[in-house]
Length: 386
Image 1: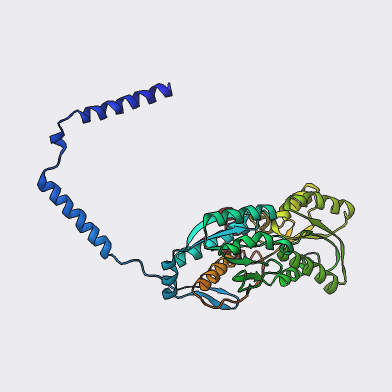
Image 2: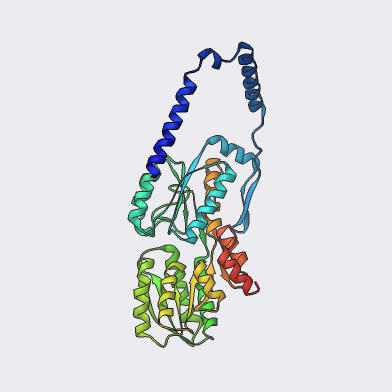
């Protein structure tokens, strides 16, 4: 029936078109005076469009690395005249990754730079290599990304360097690479401090004594490796009444459920666990809840809606440490732009890590992701009086 109605509508439309086409050609031709008037109007509109000035650029500065980091309006006009295009690859497709993309997009828009590509590598070096090859084929002028397996990453980025594409890394840089040579700058956090804050959080959550477990990244990932090792060192050195019973390693977030199950089977009396970042922490949270371990405490790094909701509702997530995915990427874009202007760019731009509480969660979400908390999180905070 639907096909018949559609056929009838098409037939009717064609019929109307044919009828319109059967009229006298002269009847549809505009008079000379009408043609002259229309031509005059078009010419006037064209002249007005040419006379209309382009929108004036505005200064763009963000607070990063203990300074106002950005470009003046005059510098932005210079960047706009270059018609640059940048691309970004985030480590994971997650709220952290989306936060980076948001910061990247906003900075590019403010500086008049085209966003040519956005993708994620899922912490996979092979995927990263493919992404870099795609960016090269697109002819981008700059790339923001975090190298995976930094000790073996150089061959993946050598073709990018050889293509004349400028690189700004987040978190780490390939072994053998030097700022100002193969790449422009590295935007980082105080990663060791974040691990120490996580240890402090977990110690507080279990009352300063007891037995804890940890899940770390076992592959070479400078960001996670530094944070994980700092947590382990802090627990062992600063909390004599807390036993770190066992540390499990994962290659990817999907490994966390099986690793957590094994750790908890061997240590059913454990009081809490540190999980390297929020995506695998979700896997651990599911396991802990399935085992009915209501008093078990989880501390992780990086914001996530589910983790935050559990924290607000007094669940197993006792603490979150976050950095700013948004400003990470924005700072990297500014660094690349400054390099195109021939300005000196620091080899490293380090920002802070911060503890997230129910009281400051709205503020930390905005700082980390560059947007307001999601509606469900906002409602939960409102119900909690925050």
